[in-house]
Image (cartoon, rainbow, N blue to C red; front, side, top):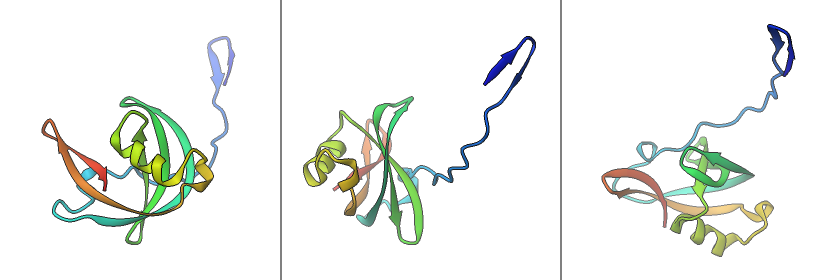
Length: 108
Protein backbone atom coordinates (compact mmCIF):
# COMPACT_ATOMS: atom_id res chain seq x y z
CA UNK A 1 0.00 0.00 0.00
CA UNK A 2 1.44 3.35 -1.01
CA UNK A 3 0.64 6.51 0.91
CA UNK A 4 0.88 9.60 -1.27
CA UNK A 5 -0.29 12.47 0.91
CA UNK A 6 -4.03 12.22 1.58
CA UNK A 7 -4.53 9.48 -0.99
CA UNK A 8 -3.29 5.92 -1.00
CA UNK A 9 -3.52 2.94 -3.28
CA UNK A 10 -4.59 -0.53 -2.27
CA UNK A 11 -2.55 -3.62 -3.14
CA UNK A 12 -3.77 -5.97 -5.84
CA UNK A 13 -5.90 -8.88 -4.58
CA UNK A 14 -4.08 -12.13 -4.11
CA UNK A 15 -6.96 -14.03 -5.75
CA UNK A 16 -6.58 -16.88 -3.32
CA UNK A 17 -9.93 -18.63 -2.94
CA UNK A 18 -9.86 -19.80 0.65
CA UNK A 19 -12.63 -21.98 2.02
CA UNK A 20 -14.74 -20.79 4.96
CA UNK A 21 -13.72 -21.80 8.48
CA UNK A 22 -15.25 -24.99 9.85
CA UNK A 23 -17.29 -24.25 12.95
CA UNK A 24 -18.80 -26.63 15.49
CA UNK A 25 -22.30 -25.93 14.16
CA UNK A 26 -21.20 -27.28 10.76
CA UNK A 27 -20.84 -30.86 12.05
CA UNK A 28 -23.44 -33.09 13.72
CA UNK A 29 -23.61 -32.94 17.50
CA UNK A 30 -24.07 -36.62 18.22
CA UNK A 31 -21.48 -38.59 16.26
CA UNK A 32 -17.98 -38.21 14.79
CA UNK A 33 -17.63 -37.28 11.14
CA UNK A 34 -14.80 -38.23 8.83
CA UNK A 35 -12.73 -35.38 7.42
CA UNK A 36 -10.02 -35.58 4.80
CA UNK A 37 -7.09 -33.22 5.33
CA UNK A 38 -6.37 -31.86 1.87
CA UNK A 39 -3.30 -29.84 2.86
CA UNK A 40 -2.53 -26.17 2.21
CA UNK A 41 -1.22 -25.75 5.77
CA UNK A 42 -0.51 -22.16 6.76
CA UNK A 43 0.28 -20.35 9.97
CA UNK A 44 -2.60 -18.55 11.59
CA UNK A 45 -2.59 -15.82 14.19
CA UNK A 46 -6.28 -15.26 14.81
CA UNK A 47 -7.93 -13.55 17.72
CA UNK A 48 -8.03 -16.96 19.43
CA UNK A 49 -4.24 -17.33 19.36
CA UNK A 50 -1.47 -18.76 17.20
CA UNK A 51 -1.94 -22.01 15.35
CA UNK A 52 -2.15 -23.73 12.00
CA UNK A 53 -4.88 -23.52 9.38
CA UNK A 54 -5.34 -26.31 6.86
CA UNK A 55 -7.99 -27.33 4.37
CA UNK A 56 -10.29 -30.25 5.16
CA UNK A 57 -13.08 -31.86 3.20
CA UNK A 58 -16.16 -33.00 5.12
CA UNK A 59 -18.52 -34.78 2.79
CA UNK A 60 -18.39 -32.78 -0.42
CA UNK A 61 -17.66 -29.43 1.28
CA UNK A 62 -14.22 -27.86 1.58
CA UNK A 63 -13.47 -26.03 4.85
CA UNK A 64 -10.53 -24.34 6.57
CA UNK A 65 -9.78 -25.78 10.03
CA UNK A 66 -7.89 -23.64 12.55
CA UNK A 67 -6.09 -25.50 15.34
CA UNK A 68 -4.34 -23.59 18.13
CA UNK A 69 -0.84 -24.79 18.99
CA UNK A 70 -1.50 -25.17 22.72
CA UNK A 71 -4.48 -27.55 22.49
CA UNK A 72 -5.09 -31.30 22.66
CA UNK A 73 -6.31 -31.12 19.03
CA UNK A 74 -2.89 -29.91 17.91
CA UNK A 75 -1.09 -32.51 20.03
CA UNK A 76 -3.14 -35.32 18.46
CA UNK A 77 -2.54 -34.08 14.91
CA UNK A 78 1.16 -33.48 15.55
CA UNK A 79 1.53 -37.03 16.91
CA UNK A 80 -0.19 -38.44 13.82
CA UNK A 81 1.37 -36.29 11.08
CA UNK A 82 4.61 -34.87 12.54
CA UNK A 83 6.26 -31.48 12.15
CA UNK A 84 6.29 -31.27 8.33
CA UNK A 85 3.12 -29.43 7.21
CA UNK A 86 3.40 -31.04 3.76
CA UNK A 87 2.74 -34.41 5.44
CA UNK A 88 -0.47 -33.21 7.07
CA UNK A 89 -2.74 -35.11 4.71
CA UNK A 90 -5.07 -37.97 5.46
CA UNK A 91 -8.26 -38.89 7.26
CA UNK A 92 -9.23 -37.69 10.73
CA UNK A 93 -12.38 -37.90 12.84
CA UNK A 94 -14.07 -34.72 14.08
CA UNK A 95 -16.71 -34.33 16.76
CA UNK A 96 -18.57 -31.37 18.20
CA UNK A 97 -17.11 -30.80 21.66
CA UNK A 98 -18.07 -28.39 24.41
CA UNK A 99 -15.87 -26.51 26.87
CA UNK A 100 -17.16 -23.96 29.38
CA UNK A 101 -20.46 -23.82 27.53
CA UNK A 102 -18.92 -23.14 24.13
CA UNK A 103 -19.00 -25.64 21.27
CA UNK A 104 -15.83 -26.33 19.29
CA UNK A 105 -14.50 -28.78 16.71
CA UNK A 106 -12.74 -31.65 18.47
CA UNK A 107 -10.29 -34.09 16.87
CA UNK A 108 -10.97 -37.64 18.05
